[in-house]
Image 1 (spheres, one colour):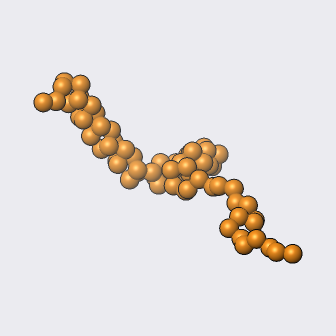
Image 2 (cartoon, rainbow, N blue to C red; image 1 turned 90 degrees about the vertical axis):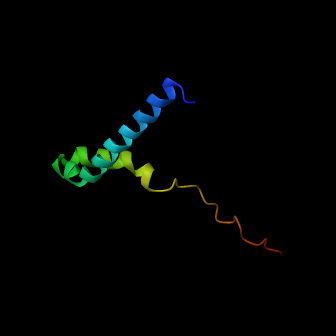
Image 3 (cartoon, rainbow, N blue to C red; image 1 turned 120 degrees about the vertical axis):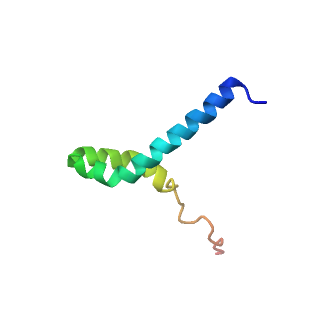
Length: 68
């Protein structure tokens, strides 16, 4: 049996998911209405959710050892 808090949490999550979906659908119009500086700021904040994190690559990593 679910507790009152669990029921409230499930309802809250569903409500938030619905709100987020509507906002995502409206995102192009919302971004278009922003000033260029504000739009760039929002896009920079959204980038981590879209692109994978960049990791350092070492030029010799994965290469065979060179024998002299």
